[in-house]
Length: 366
Image (cartoon, rainbow, N blue to C red; front, side):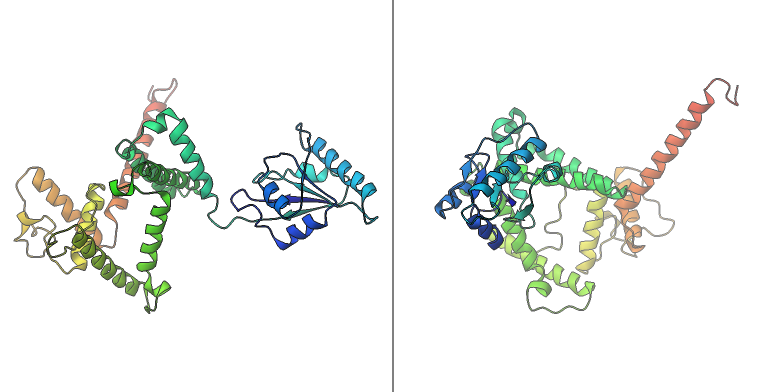
């Protein structure tokens, strides 16, 4: 009997299942194809001494013949007089070639000695990012500032994959967004904590603590009956967080604002919508155009028939009014403009195709 023992390089060597240890202790021979196999020290310490053998490197079929021969020779030498028991320590983390199993001439079983926990593959990204930062000339030169445009671009590409309902593209684009997070954390890790440095683990710890803190109805004793209750709790928690941050910054932070924490680096339409949402939730009524439109009676739009003077300010105020109208209709102005932009692009391309067709020899216009 051949046992092909699979293991994960992301799990500490020796942390194997009971079935794996039973097979190892019952084996007549334990074979490893490399002296560097991470399980060897742990097995040797447990008095299971693997034999490092030279295995064929030319493919699955020669390896299957080699392992089958090892089982047959172990049967001859078996101390129990029965079938030989051989355990093959497969290279950790490598997918098992189905051709290997189909080419074996002896009975076999496949045991998973250790399994990855969900998210364990992120450890591979940590190792890859470390190597890129050290070995790649381009990656070595990057800073938070130089990577900023890529962070934004990758987020937009992920948004486009969602809009296109393309799950394959979304899987890839989310990975690109994730890579940016790992990259920034790796750069920050080169600074000391006193100088504002942090690691990817610090990022994970901060995020985990925030998620637990903002979901007391899941991780605490708070009861909610609807998504509206969750939103109300969320706003109160965020308000307390903003006040705590302002106080931690030193000095008298002054009264907290509903707008604290709004990122002004986001696209203008998204910024306008978020500012209006924050003000509305706080019960602050401000005309959509800001201070220059303070006499607006409805607090959102200029009076009917009012025409503010031409100029950049009036255009901006008009856009703020459109944002307010979209929100009142339950629409996201950013998404609506993106949808309109896509319709515009489709119309332009359709016109271009018609123009191109009309220029072909023998077209109707000739």
